[in-house]
Amino acid sequence: MSGEVTFWPSGRSVKVKPGTTLLDAARRAGVPIQTRCGGKAACFMCKVNVRPGSDLMPISEQERRKLGGLDEGGTRLSCQARIRGKAEVDIPLDPLRAAVARQLAKQAEEDDSLW
Image 1 (cartoon, helix red, strand yellow):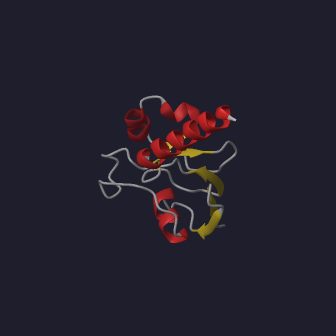
Image 2 (cartoon, rainbow, N blue to C red):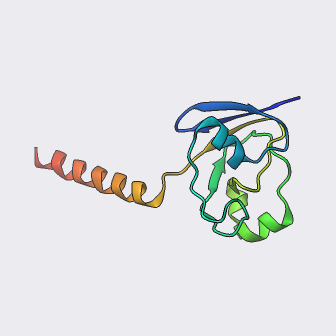
C-alpha cells in the first residue's frame, strides 16, 4: 500500500511510503513549507491544514500538546504528521505573503469604490 498527498493551492501530488511525514512529502513534491527547526517540532512554522477525510496516522500526544487545541480544526505540524493513505493538505501563505495579499485586496476594494 502506498500513500499519496495532494498539496493545495498548488495542486501538486506525490506518492510516498506510508509513514512519510507531510514535510518530507512536500519537499519531494517541490512544495515549499517554511521551517526553522529542521523538523523537530520546535518552531511551529510548518503548520498545515489537513482536509477532512485525509488518511494520516493518529496524532501523537506530543504533537497534540504542542498544537494546543489547533488539531481539532485540522491543523497539524507537517514535520510530525505521517501519511497512512491518501491525503489533501492546504499550505497556508507565509505571513508576509498573506499580509501583502490582504493589503492588495483592500486596495482593490478601495479602487473599485471610487468608480
